[in-house]
Every structure is written in C-alpha cells, then in structure tokens.
Length: 343
Image 1 (spheres, rainbow, N blue to C red):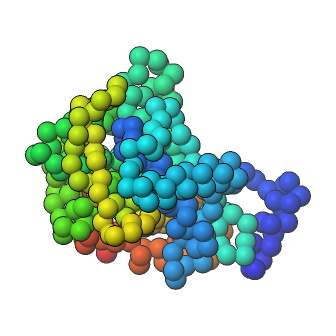
Image 2: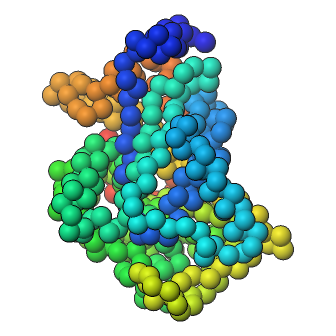
Image 3: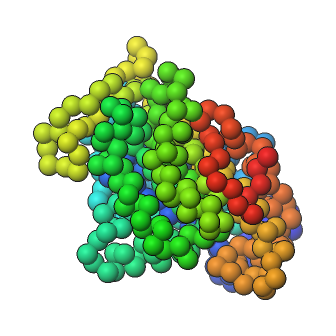
C-alpha cells in the first residue's frame, strides 16, 4: 500500500478524513427497459477489478449489495425460465452507490447512479422536476436507456410510445445549462438478437436517427455522445411482440426466446458505460487545468483535488481508455467535444 493510501485509511478510521468525492451519473429511460438489470450486471462483473490491466476496483456499497444480489437471482431465474416479463419495474427513483478505489486501499471515489423514470421529466409535481434538474446539473455523465426491440422492430412503430424519445429530447434541450460540457451515452438494452444477427451497427444508426434533433443540440453545446449497446441478459433474445393485456404504457410487450439449448444469464458490455465515465473524468481533469477560470472552480472540486494529489490513481484511470470499445460492435461516436479524447 502506498503512503497516500496509508494516510487515507488512517484518517477514515479516525473519522478525520474529508468526505469522499462522488461522481453523479444520471440515468433516464422508460419503465421496464432493463436499467436495474444493467446495474446488477455491472456489480457482478466488477467484483474484484473494474477491468483487467487496472488495479481499480468497483464495489457496491452496503446499502445496495442486498438488493442487487436479490435482483441477480431474479435475473438468473428469468433466463432459466425463458421469461423476462415478470421482472419488476419501478415508477419511482432508484439510486445505486458504488465505491471506486485502488486494490489494497480504501475507496477514493464514489459513483452515485440515479435512475429517473420518464414520468419524472413531465411530472406535474415541481419537486419531481426539480429533483431531476438538480441531480442532472451535478452529474458528470447522462445515460439514456433505449429499449432496443421497440426501436428496431416493425419499423420502429412502437419506439416513441415506449422510449419516449420526444420527451427526453425536449427536456434536455430545455435545460441546456445543466447538460453543457457533459458526456451523454445512448445505451440500447436487450440487444441479444441484433448481436447474434450481426446488426449492432444498425442498432446504433437507428438510435442516432431517433435522436437526430438532440444530436444537433449536442453539437452546439460542447457535448460528447456515444452509442454503447448492452447485452442485457445474454441467454434469451427478443422473439416477437404480443398484445399487452395488462394496464401499461405500451400496447405491445416483448416476448423472448432461448438463444441456446440451456440458456444462461450472460450479460455483455455492461461495464462499458463506466469505462467511458472514467475516461471522461480523466480527460476533464486535463481540460479543466487549461481553462482560464480557477482550476477547481467547478462542481467536482474534491475529485480534482484528489487526482491532483494522487498520481497513481489518475494513471490507473487513464489506463481504462485502453479497454473502451470504440468504433466496433455498434459502439460509435455520435458527437465530439473539446474534452473527451479516446483515440
């Protein structure tokens, strides 16, 4: 353990350390799109190290560990039964807290991911709208979840009904000051069928086309954006739509079929949004040093102070860039800005 790590651990035990800096990640998307599934997959794929070749670890904080373990068992069961229809969907705000640090040391940073259902963007309750705006303003990255079968099937006939593209677009455009200079990731979920069919590039293209108005807005506001498709369950894939016999947001529900004889829960690409996040933070740190305003005159003061004093942690964050999937498997840049540098 290095000297900084020893001092930090001592102070934490004595109660004298400063509060741990927190990176906020704002996730938007409709109910039942699979956002909690992605959080669960990130947790289980990152138990020992966030990626090979880096000593950075990611661990769910105690408040989330039990719920993520419970949800993991539900996912395994859903794939085994070849039925994802019974996975719970929430119309309330969900929050996930992860600790980030170097192996052998106490956590250095926390990542708070808050999931806002689409209903919050147009809620008649001012406190709901203010909650979204306040968290988004303090966020480093915004994730826009996309239910891929609704985007791809039947010429996207049910895409707007399910993914609420227009609502997301208008909300971000109406709150430009809270989005400027950020990283936005479009995250198509449930992409199994399209990966198996070799169509992930088509998924990315249709995602970009569905948000064309938002893409123009990003170009004008120094916002970097990418499409990062996720294999949510792995063992089962979309088969067809059926009529929704229950009260719900959509007229159709997705029905899945097994991919293998004995389907297993095998998500893929789930840590990629976090790789993009850490790459962006390291790039933002270098970019911020070149700005005319005060070096720490921003919402991430405590994190930048940490990076300034901890060369090893900063170097390990920079290594993450090597593991970012870029311009392959449907991972494509949509807009660039003056901050993010991947290749």
